[in-house]
Every structure is written in structure tokens, then in C-alpha cells.
Image (cartoon, rainbow, N blue to C red; front, side):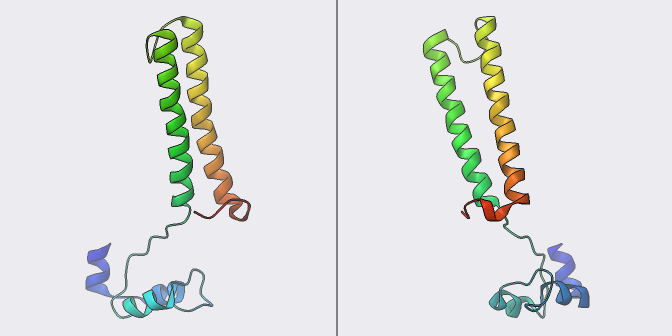
Length: 115
């Protein structure tokens, strides 16, 4: 994409999309001024900070649970069947929690913190 913008330059569609405050997704005026003659491949950061925070918290909790399993069962994975199933359910619920929080943050951004 960077090669495309370097060779073609900005199109009218690019200016309409990122140009002024009245456009659909305006760029910061300083950034627009910098790239208005050459164009640029635009990728919005969006909810990256929030998703990274949620992922980090859930990962730390998962590592904590691996430590608890090692202390309690003597192993990180496997072990007694009921404990293994309970742990699998817990780790699955962590994954579902991440997916739900990420989706809710995208569809209702005003209800979540901005990181």
C-alpha cells in the first residue's frame, strides 16, 4: 500500500475520506497537511490500547492459574480428569471474556475507558 501511495499519490476519494472535518473519517489536521500531496495508507489505532489491556490482564490471570495448578496438582496441563476439565473450562471462559469485551468495546465505545 505504501508503494501505491508513493507512485500514484492521493486520489479525490482519499481527500474526500480523510480531508476535512466534514469528511467521514478526518485525519488530524497536522497529519493531513503532511500527507495531502503524497497520500498515505491510513490505519486507525481504534481500540488497540483497550484490547491490549484486557489481553494482558487475562494473560496474567492465566499464568497465575498455571502456577496454582503446578502447586496444587503438580502439573500445568493434564492431571486429574476433573481438575483438567475445570481448568479447560476456566481457560475457555477467559477466551470468551476477551472476545465479548472486545466486541462490546467496538459496538459501545462510549461505555468503556479510553486507553
